[in-house]
Length: 78
Image (cartoon, rainbow, N blue to C red; front, side):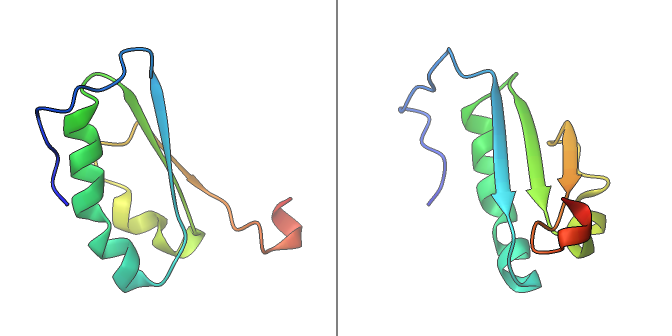
C-alpha cells in the first residue's frame, strides 16, 4: 500500500508513534510504510519503538525524531 495524496491527514495529529517489534525481515519490509507515514503527515513528529537489536537499523534514519528501544519482554527494563 502506498501513500495516497488524495487522502488528507488529520491536522490535529502532531506526533506519531510507530511500534515495530518483529523479526528483522519484517522490520526491514516495514520501512516502506515508514516513508508513507512521513509523506502523509508532513511536519509531524515521527517516533519509533523497536527492539534494542533493531535500533541500529534506524540510527541514521532522519524520518524519526526519536527511537525508543525497549524490550518489554525483558523484566530488567521495566
